[in-house]
Image 1 (cartoon, rainbow, N blue to C red):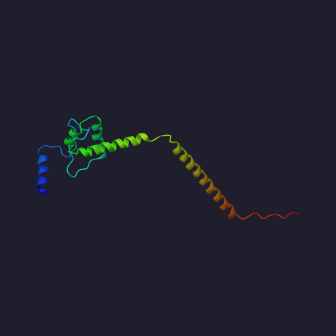
Image 2: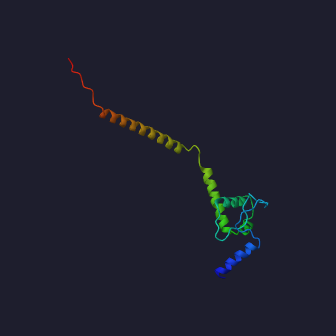
Image 3: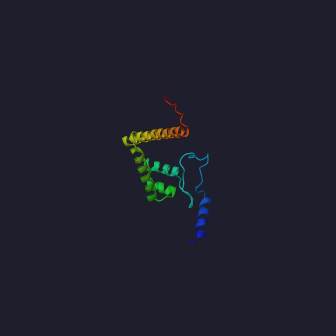
Length: 140
C-alpha cells in the first residue's frame, strides 16, 4: 500500500457519501449540536469537540461505539476522559476564601500603600531640598 493508495482510499470514502471532516449543514438533524464523524487524517480535534465526546462518555455511551463512530482509538478517548475528570476535580478543589490567599492579598495591599507613601515622601523631600531656605532674621 503506497501513499497513492491512501489518497485513493480517502477520495473513495468522500465520494461514497462518508461525512469526513465536514461540518453539518442546517438541513441535517444534528446541525448545531454535537459534531459527528471522524476527522480527516491531517485534521485536529478542538478542545470543544473533545469536551463534547467526553460528555457523551460520561452520559453513558459505550466507549467502543464512540471509538468506531469517531475513528478515534479507545485509549485516546480514555485519556481525554481522565484529563477532563482531573480538570473538573482541580476546578472543584479551589477555595474561594482560602485563608493564605486572603493574607497574601492583605499583605500585597499594605506593601502597595507603603510604597506609594514612600514615593510621596521622597518627592516631598526633593521639592524641599531644591527650594532655598528663607533667610533668617537676626535676633536682637
